[in-house]
Length: 109
Length: 113
Image (tube, rainbow over the protein chains, first blue to last red):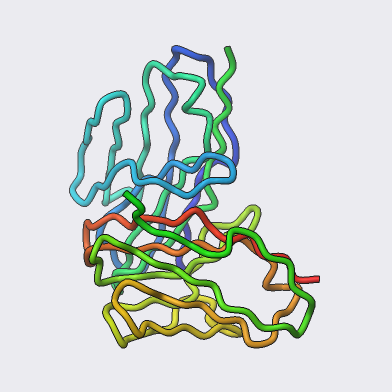
């Protein structure tokens, strides 16, 4: 079966750094996406990785290791507005997205 | 900049009733998707379309039907609503496959009593 695992909830302090991990087992691999979803709102696209390595985009970075079936999203200089759920999704061999249940990130002052 | 628009935003149905959820996108995207999101679970694909006039089943298609008569619209129908279909429904669109991100509507919160 196909499986995406992420921690259910994490807590971090404003101004700090947090790393959200995602491990996956899927039928094929055509890339990994990270989305942000604020409570009661739509998911919004953050990043896409298809090759191994780190992709940096402002305060957010995403890392991929295809051999380990592992990715992480790194958020720096945390702000209160970063309180949200972060969804990891893998595109399988049929080009369909398999979604993790999401990690709820709580930022404390 | 409308993007992806879903109507209605909220709806309460009784078991056995039918309804249609409408999704419209103004980005000229070929691909459109319907997902449901339930607590503690990842988004699950119900049906999708790779172009006008095409539809295909996703992971959880039972109890739902779809139509894509126009490129910009993707309709999701519930023929006979059941309490298990209580969920938040999201429509999304994308330019294509591969690295093209999906753009989501604001969701429809549906309760079946």
